[in-house]
Image (cartoon, rainbow, N blue to C red):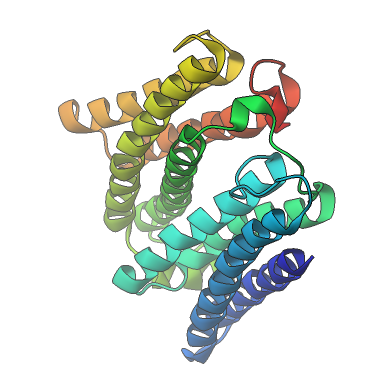
Length: 287
């Protein structure tokens, strides 16, 4: 299918962008960073075109399969990677620190590579529970929140490395890592980025839970049934609520905030993938 070709090409584009960013760190000159940015933007455009084309392809199949490409694990991973790149490219326009991409691009690249190599790309009819107008509202809001939390995690990892470098005053054992950190935002900027990403992602995640509850009531007759996915969604919500509470009332910054953000992202990944692949429940159709 044409959409799969577009997804394969955009995956290679993300890989090229990451390699160029590493080249930018390893050598002097800004041309690798400029090429990396344009490669990422071009790949992102192909990524979006691939999702639109997959939607078109679903309408060309017999039996009224036509639907938005958000309804199985393959499509959700592809959309997750697209959302990560959306947040990253918007941030890049404002921050103008190319090395941030070295910590963000691997998330999108890993997702796309996993989807293209290991997941089934078949377009199949929707099961009855998914035939709802709430599908788009719920899935889009959840994955935009996932992407924001991914950005917060990447900022936290960079912030921890930067904090170690700034506190020790040493460039580090790795020359490339030392150069990377010198070109990266300082620890305070990364801490602020971590906070802002979570401050954006948290209300979107809340919206995802609310729309999911309304959808659950229309599909299964109950707003909340303590399904594993629902339970872990609440756990993720509580972790990030605790982060914002600690930040605003206790002044949590720096390393403590970074570790809590990373812990929250680990819980987010389990909510997304662990529940679908390891636990059974009402959301098992997504596995």
